[in-house]
Structure formats: C-alpha cells, structure tokens
Amino acid sequence: MEYQHVIHPFLPVYDEASQVLILGSLPSVKSREEKFYYGNSQNRFWKVISAIFGEEVPVTIEAKKYLILKNRLALWDTIYSCDIVGSSDSLIKNAEPTNLLPLVQNSRISHIFCNGKTAWTYFNKYQKTLLNIEAKLLPSTSPANAAWSLEKLIDSWREVYNAAKSGM
Image (cartoon, rainbow, N blue to C red; front, side):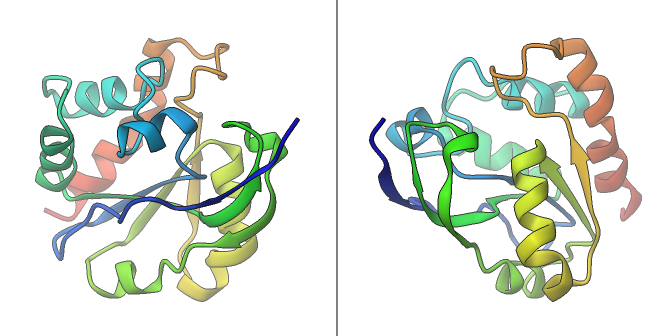
C-alpha cells in the first residue's frame, strides 16, 4: 500500500445562477485520468443526474458541464488535497479541505448535497460552520456502493431535482 499525495486537479463547475451544490470527496484515479468529475464509467453519477432531470446521459466533458449548469447545479469536492491509496476514501489521511466560500459567495447556492458519507463527513467537519448551510447526505453513486441499485439511487437523488426547481 503506497500513499500518493493528491491535489485536486480541476476547478469547480458552477456559475452565478447555480443554486444546488453537489459535493464529492475527491476525484478518483479514473476521474483524474479523464480530467473531469465522475470519470469512472462504473460510477452512476451521470446516469442519476440525467435521469432526474429527464436528459440524455452526457458523454463529453462539455456536455457534462452543460447538464450541470443548465439545471442550476454546481459540482465540487470537500477535499482539496490529501494522501490517499488509489481511490479509496477509507484510506484518506492528511486531508486539507476545499475552500467552498468563494463558490457560495459567487452563486445562488442555497442547497448542498453530499455524494456519499466521506464527502458528508468532511463537509460537516470543515465547511458547515463557515458556510452556515446544512448539507444533505445522499447515497454514493460510486460502484463501491453496490447495495444501491440505479433505480434506488435515482429515487433518492430526486431531492436534487426538487431543490434545483424550487428556486425557479
């Protein structure tokens, strides 16, 4: 087991109209290789987001960004840098939190959802008090969360759709 120091490799996806922030923990090895969020084809994130908004599953990075921004969402992660083995959230150490304040200040973020327990744990530890916004824990779309079927994930993630549409 060899730890690697990882610094978050890409910027958040958001604009001034973004109302709902979806936070992961840190991009996986595959996502870092693909140079974008949820780059592992086994991760169900893009299928879930597409389903709840009634859209086609995006393939390109530009199409993924468009899907996020079109629906007033924002994407980022709770961890800016850490030491990690592979993509295993359970092996994260020496984590430095992401500074979420500029994103929240430069958008209309009023809802935050965490994609899995690691993101939720780090948000509550480092960012909740600073932002003064509660985050809602959603089941992880990771392939490691095999207990959740795609249908169950889509059903539980509908809260993201409701939050995005509530501010229209």
